Image 1 (tube, rainbow, N blue to C red):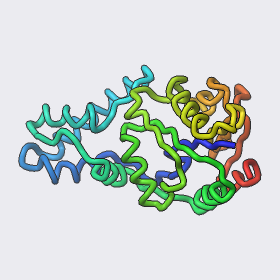
Image 2 (image 1 turned 180 degrees about the vertical axis):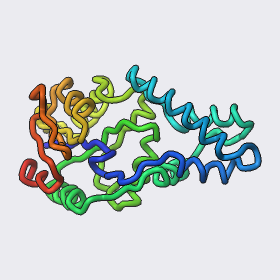
Image 3 (image 1 turned 60 degrees about the vertical axis):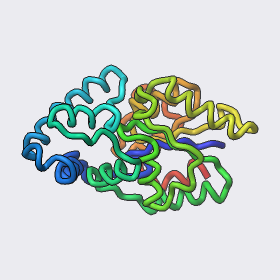
Length: 232
C-alpha cells in the first residue's frame, strides 16, 4: 500500500483563512514606506480575482514566482523572492492551522506499519514551504515527498499532476502497483475525480457528508478517526 495525501483540510485544517493577515506583515516588513496598507490590500483583492481566473483554467498562480513581482512593480518595491521559511511564515499567518489528533495518530500508525506516504497539493505556495509547515507540526518526517501545484504550474484534478506523484511513488516502491495507491483528500472535484482519472483508489474525507453523486470514491468517511477502520 502507498498513501498520497492532500494537504489543506486533510492533513491540516484551517479554522481561519485570511490572506490579509500575511499581507499586512509583509507590508510592514517591506512596503510601509512605499504605500498605505489599504492600497496593498486592495491590490491583493485584484490579484485574488486573477487567481480565481487562472484556477478556472486549471492553472496555478504561484505566490512567490508571480504575485511578489506584481506587488513590486505596482508599489516600487524590491522584494522579489522569499525563502521557504519566509513563505511558510506567510502561509501560517494567513491560515489558523490545526493538526487534528486523529490525523497525527493515523500518520504515526501508517509509519509504524511501513506504509509509504506522500503529499500532493493544490497551493499557490511552493512545496518546500508546505513541507516546512508540516515540519513545524512535527509530521514532515513521515512523508517521502511532497508536490505543490505552485511548482508544477497546473492544479488538481490535472491528470499529469497526479501522474507525477504516482510515477515517483511507484519508482520508490517497486514492489507496489498502481492498484495499491490510495489518495486521501477532502474535495470531490479535485481529489476524488483526480484519483479516479489516473486509476488509483480514493478515500474521500467527506467532512460535510455530501453525496457521492457519480459514485467515483473508492472509500468515504466523515471524520479522521474512521481512517483507521478503512486503511489499517
